[in-house]
Length: 461
Image (cartoon, rainbow, N blue to C red; front, top):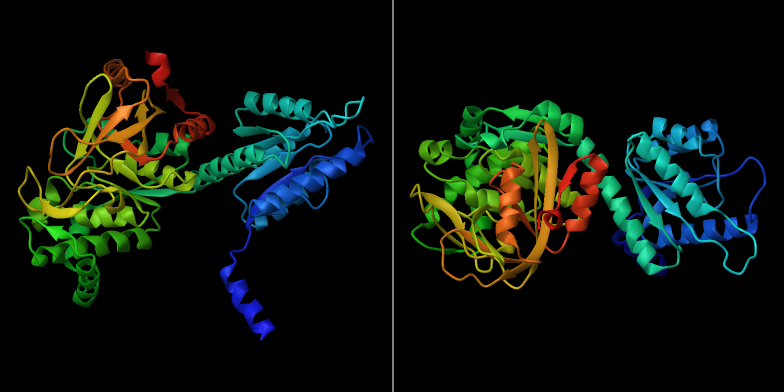
């Protein structure tokens, strides 16, 4: 009986995620090697407690050969982040060997000195300072973590650096699909595949809008019926639409899902306006809201950079995003709005309705949840380079009722008019993206990793 319980329990425990760890050693003795061993043990325990399986840390690396062997093991395990630990100062030249073999960011972890000793025990911070200068001069991305392995704040900082590194590597391997193009007149949202690949690492995959329309029409009826049953079980309220209107939404939903799976897309941008409601008779917004709610990075109006930002946020743990319009503002708050595309989970009481402009189904109405901390961020191309921004605040109760989705955001620090003027002069497209929670620092650090200029609200005031 005991054996059976242990077997059942093992199925519920997720395996530890692999994490590359290099411990820089020394060919010649030096510093306090007893302290070195203590720090290595404490760092190993901290990494394990955070849910990671350290790969490459089995023995210190001291030259190009041992670094190569360790990185081979790290690559073989599919690690997407690399920590470099120096419990005793090692050879600074080894930074080049690491950079040549590891294309992703490097997390430099500087550990503390032995406080009760009269002699310098490790020079770990000096060592990582040396490496940071070398990495920066070589334009190789890195993060720096300083502190005791047993300190919970240090572990939290280390976890954030690991997540940032993993997000960077995931973007470098990502593929975003663009069905059609940017919406008519939305010139500032047009994407350049070469700039995207060069700076973000993301592959752009152009897809035919007419072929997508054919795909929607050709979805198997039995699959549509099965999906309709699921949608009806959600019991969403309806206004000026009927249950029969849900059939086309299931077709849209299945067509987008199939397209992403077949083309192995990590994100998707749709040119839905004006063709889809005019040709197929409905807007695809319920389908897109469902997909977003399920964690897929998907944006409307051909806004490919917004889709990439949604994907980055997913990897960073920032959650779902609402691609929206900056409708109006005063000095303290921004009124964000868009007709019915928000993820269902972000909406207070979602209901299904018709579009306010082209009067056809199917949008998801309802304001976003109030009294929530939020971050607004944006990634865009300007002067053949990407730039990014992010700022924080809190949602408050809307001052008036609007169809579609809306959120009134009280902006930390106010000064909204000046900030809007700054963003306009920086060329920011009219689609900001709102995320639940405060993530400005995380977005900023990812931009730094990617070599993207950051537009700061504080510098505009």
